[in-house]
Structure formats: structure tokens, C-alpha cells
Amino acid sequence: MNLLLFRDEDFTGPDTVSITGRRFMHVKKVIRAKIGTQLACGRLNGMMGTGEVTAIDRNGFQMTVSFDRQPPPKLPLTLVLAMPRPKMLKRILQAATSMGVRDIYLINAFRVEKSFWLSDLLEPEKLERHLLLGLEQAKDTVLPNLYLKRYFTSFVKTDLTRMSQGKNCILAHPKTSQPCPVGVKEDTILVIGPEGGFIDLEVETLGEAGFAPYSMGQRILRVETAVTALISRLFPA
Image 1 (tube, rainbow, N blue to C red):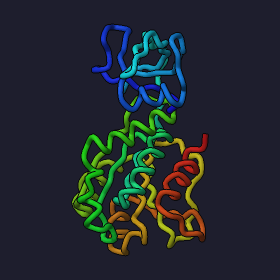
Image 2: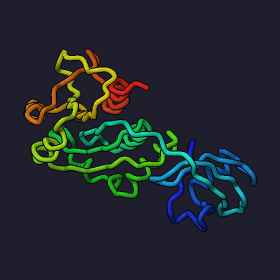
Image 3: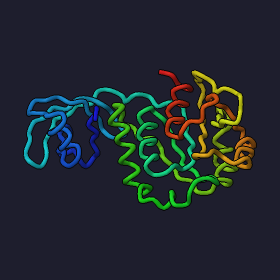
Image 4: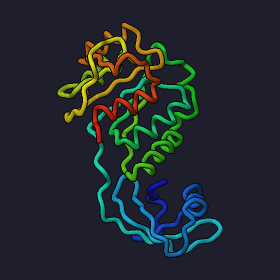
């Protein structure tokens, strides 16, 4: 946790907050904050700044806070990802959020197991928890937009076709020799398939929506590795 994030309900006054639970335990046991300790903090979906611990008891702590900085800008990137298995999804959500992805779409595909869509991880509060962990890691305050789309064909032919107008449209696909571009500047939509890849019909449907297939080379990467590798290649720091 490199940034303490505060929700509106944490505020006890215009510039005072009260924190309990997971954040309190981290500040107490990991950071070992004392009265007077100053910590980087931010208001969820708002400004960033500094907080000073003013009181601590066994259940929580109080801080005075001031916000004077904008959060880092998001990448001009929309990630469209075939639903991965739940354990992998947790890590991908945290990583994509940390890297500054603006919009995330989780979609269905032929090789996505039906059980993935039944996972309790897809409950809104559990999804948000992993997005928040990504923000805390990267020192950001603004949540990415997250959407779940269970119907591949209707999503691609309606939503994705509309979204792709005027954008750089990239389909990560190992069965091509066309290398993925490096250092793009324009608004980009990156589509990544499931373990095992998209089937030919899905690749064809995405192609009709304007998505050209690109490869990272001969090596076949796991989805979570491909996500971070492709984002880093498209938008190097």
C-alpha cells in the first residue's frame, strides 16, 4: 500500500478522516505509524495529498488531510479481455489498474469456462477491492471503468464496433507474424483472448469490427503475462 485511499464516508469533517479495518491494520502493523506520522493519501476518484496521524486507538486512527495534487493521467487504453479464471482475474485487475488502464471489458469467448461467470469474485464489491489494491500500489485515486459482457457476438458487432471508430484496434493473436506496435500515442483498444486463444470464427468477427491481429513473437504467453507485456510495449514509460 503506497497510498491511503479515502471514501466519502471516511470523512468526519472537511479535512479529517477516521480509518478502521484493513487500512488501519496496514498502517499500524506494516507502516507502524505514530501520532505525527505523515502519509501519502488520496480521495477516491479525486485529488491526492498528505495526511497526518492525529490519534490512534485499538480500533482505528484519525488523520487530518489536505489534497493539492491531481492523480496521474490514465493511459488512452481500453482493455477487452476474455474472462480468465478467477485467481488470474484478481492479479490482472490489480496489474491493469496499477498500469493506468482507463476502461476494462470482461467478455465471453468459446474457450471461456462457464464456471468463470459464476464466481463470487464477480460481485461488484469484490471486483472493486482488487481495483482499489491496484490504485493503492500505483499511487492513483481514479478507478478504471469496468464492464462485464457475457455475449461475445452482440458485444463485438454493436458495442465494440461503435467504440473502435477512429481508434487504434489491436487483437493480440499468436498465429500471425505481424509484430505488435511499440510506443503508440493514439487512443487504443487492446483485445486479449482466453487461455488457448480465440477460435477462428471469433478472430474473423473481431476482424470485421476493425481489429487487426498482432503478435508478441513465437513464445506463447499466459494471459496475465500477456496483459502486462502488451501494455508495456504499447505504452512504455
